[in-house]
Image (spheres, helix red, strand yellow):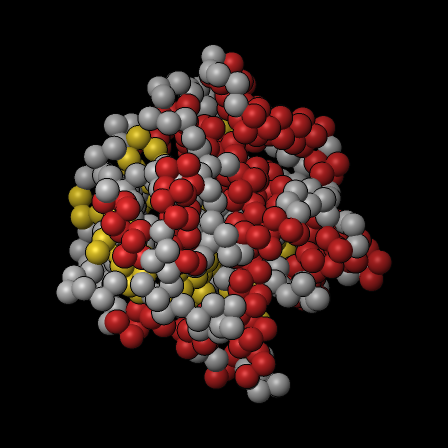
Length: 494
């Protein structure tokens, strides 16, 4: 199997209006995403054929019905994108999935491209709404009223790796990763112990270690077994415990080290001696320790700080990848991870322009001190929400970025290009390029196929069950030399 670190992320955006008493989030979400025009007027179905979120990695299928909307509902719910990603309505939220990427820098760029697409939808939608009832969109994980919505990561792994081994090796990593990937939050949720400010938005909402559910009784390890690929070769690990980040560094660090840890697990590199005595208590305790100096208890009776547990994973990564051929992507991840942990171990506030929870804390704490506010002042909770407002002229994150108080990782140009151009090195290249070049002939798309309607009696399906195929190297010449979709299908068959 290739050593490429194939990943993708899904962001559920918070949506509301100035009139919450009459606001319907489902109708609002549909209204929002269907204002992608005039950027794109695509009318392409999402193909649900190979999707089944009810299959559990522990070897059973839970009761329930697979989603299969009518054709008109399918058009309204889904916008397959020219960049190979997907904009859609999931339940009561607008949601954006990045295309498949092979490195965390691409994840950062394609996540920001998704924010840009949702910004375009929002601007278009609000032009046609009444001036006193505009929509507001937030890239965060809680509405401050006890409800949480998700941010999910996906990692390609070997099917042959036992799921129990993933749970054992990954749990301490995910519980402690929030020290650089947390989005920061004023107060608490879900009847948890009180806190003025905490590191993670999601930590309060995790109530069990392992489960299939993503909406209630959320697990640290999600067992969804929906590979979106050849199920005999691959599994897709669906991680639901992370925060949605505004900071590009937090996003990079959330995905990069996780991909390295999973690659070690996938290739039988043992990560032992880090099992937590109580992961559910630990995830909440770490979220409340802004000093990063407090310890959590391990199953073997020892006590480590979150930084020490992360450094133990980093040490294992250095050992494992030292035996491999040098890879600049891996080298960069290790370098950023190491530098971040070193600073977090000495003085976390050295990273006040890099990591979300520290950027936000610096902003709110300075404001509170200037005004003489306590952390229970509602103005601080409002500023917490405004930090995640995706409007560049209103969102506090974007204000800080513009004023030089946030260190960016991606260029504005790369984000603009990623808005309508797919990555070159995964199957997203074929999916996105076909949508862009043959929009009237693409009947449907999904993660595992592109279906063409070229006027014959049957719909032609091009399978994409290997996420690492369909790249520019493999099909770019064929796609560029095909003038029509019919010619493309003929050339692919030949």
